[in-house]
Length: 590
Image (cartoon, rainbow, N blue to C red; front, side, top):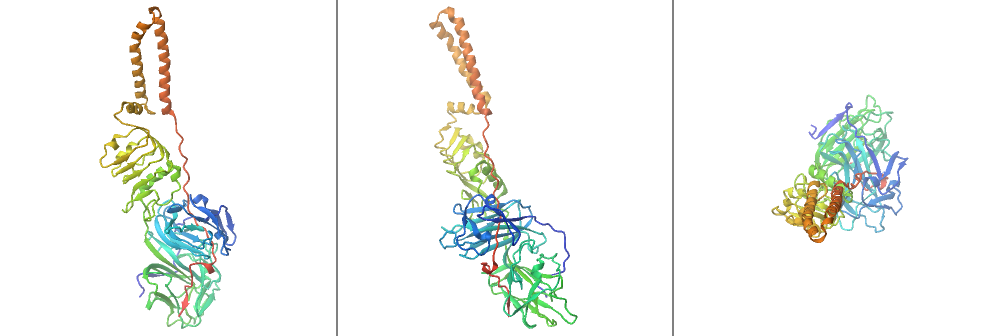
């Protein structure tokens, strides 16, 4: 009896589906746009999709692809991200990241680093001196954009990337895994093919590499057309070839020794008959895991295909899968294509959305912060260099370390980041009054505002806040709220017209009260009238000037920092499968 983990897909009809209409190919490190005429793929430079990194040209003789001639390396920041926003929420995508070291730095030291997407761990990348390494994932996007990040994990080993690609998939494809889990490609093989198959033969640009094995016979289909509209929609070119054994007694088998540890897998096997069988011919076989049958008999159809998948099955590196002829079959087994994925952990929902939205508003205000892309806290411990996060689910932002970031101007309100415990804004050029919202942050324990240009009094909400350590030294415009001059300065701040007018009138009243005494003792009586008239005229003129000078600052408008478009992420790559780091010898005969 077939295991509950398996299902035989037999000639399923097409159903309504959603296609994620995105096809982005980035040649990382390149500044030019061009078309690869072999694959008809339009490649773009990556400068509009990432805000950091340096471009390099590969020094060694690159025989893989023109796409691998350049790369982008990141020597600053713990984590650097690409962002692609040509995405619809809920769309299913394939992302491929490619790495070709090529000794670009002349050090003959290919680095290792972490690869991430949307705040999730993807892979621990180990690059090679002269071979292409690529990684591929399939998942359902939770937001309105996606990010791919590279994070440094070893001292003096700087992450780099050669190509980044994003392909939209039909929502019905690879649907036998919960949408909250990603698939990570381990093998994708077109058995019997003599070339790599990808775009335009595969409209989703999956890369199918040739595969064969010992005691294997290659078969070519004589079908003019093969229906590929169901299942996971393999391209027809993949089904036009197959492998079989050279006699009816042999079996086709492959092992899982490319997996370093026990893993949960999703596997697709594709079967299509290569010719119209005679009435006295039968091709029938079963799938075995080790020594246990896991399928009913499979009779591959002509001009169509059967797909068998296995999902959520834990296998070890020693596990062996086999295609075994049934006793009533007159022909040996065959297989056309194979895909093997590992299934990732549940996808994260990301850092607290309220914190993320508020952080983005802070980044919009200060251009120097706008190059930071991707989830600020995840995956742990790869946070932005200038924040700390809690270990809660979802994580909260608990600290901002923005000392010496050349921030200038006034601070926007980020009081909704109410998990903040530490804020360090020292040694910048921030000005204006100290925002009162700091006093509303319930968990704030340390606030460093030293060496800025803040003016006016320290808000009472801060000075009276229990358990708060605050440093305001080096702000020459600050004063004590009990100081009369501080009150006057505060009352005459821009946009506060009425107190300023009152202060001016008070000074004029004192002058008029003293004036009769001065005049009665210093000038003749007959000049008194003309002197008083002249003095009142002068005072009236000064009053008008004083009032005008107090109103103008409140009307002045400061320039706002232009918002830099978010960087984006993409992928580009082409490869010769003969030198790919992922070996695809997936078929052997026993």
